[in-house]
Image 1 (tube, helix red, strand yellow):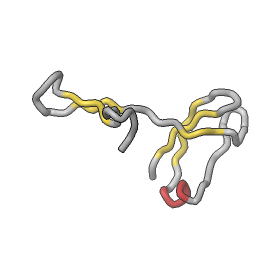
Image 2 (cartoon, one colour; image 1 turned 120 degrees about the vertical axis):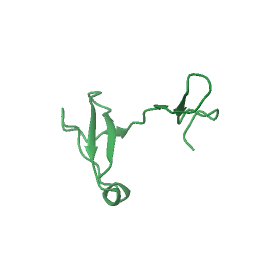
Image 3 (cartoon, one colour; image 1 turned 135 degrees about the vertical axis):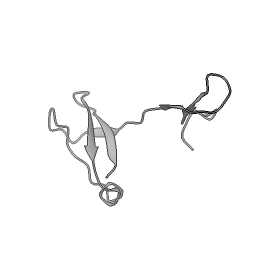
Length: 71
């Protein structure tokens, strides 16, 4: 089951929830565990992926393309 990262817009608490992909696509959301607010937003984090490829440092940053976003 996938994990989704959220941040509360009211108290700024960051938290992670586990939802099935079906529940997420149906719009199921969980309230903030700190304050109970339903005013939450999903957050995204860039990942740094180390590979065995040759090149500068042998690594690449996933999700950090020249467009500045995910593709």
